Image (cartoon, rainbow, N blue to C red; front, top):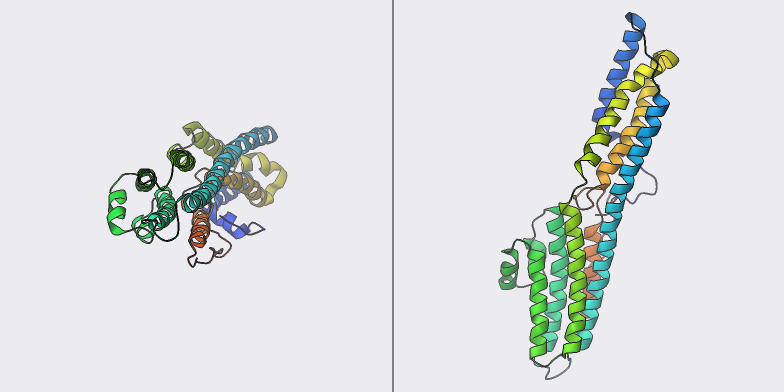
Length: 298
């Protein structure tokens, strides 16, 4: 996620440089044809075209931003649920001498939750999951989870089984088990929402038609402006085209909040937040928060 207070013009131009270069060449060609060839520029209702296209692009960008914001809200829910799971685990399971291993179980549940959120982050970004998981859980358990199609869900299932084991050993009662299971349900619901966003793209009409109409408008733009702007047509048309291409690109950038790009929801930073909070709950030394790199928070 870009965290600079002011958008960088160089970044915007770099993302649309290819269509913008093609547009500039086309603008120059239309201008030269108008002045040096027998060419009459038709009057085009560009104001009407531009207004309709702006509404179309605005509606698409709103839909894309809604997806991005939902992804951020779901990760916020994941952070809260992880804190709740750690707090309830530490409070419910017995501590002190002669607890029969309840302390070790509580520690494993909390460390597994850290491994879980990192595994989920890697799954959403289609990255390797092994190293983040092995940092917090043992090889035997990690292999069982990583062999599953959904490794994060495998880790969450293991947490549920361990909570049931705690009930069987008499460390927690059924009411406490239900409370812990309710937190696991919240975690699973958040994961399901993230997977829905990742696996369900915008409908094809939302992706194809805005791109088609924006490029068509850019083609017609110099034809409609050349009589008014003359030799300044390449400059005016390119600047106007940049506006529409930039708005189109915004929708493309936000439509997938887990695409491992600079426009992503900052999942690495949020996983680090969970790691810090849960390790400090255990009394362990926690790593520092993730800092932005060149204005981008990953």
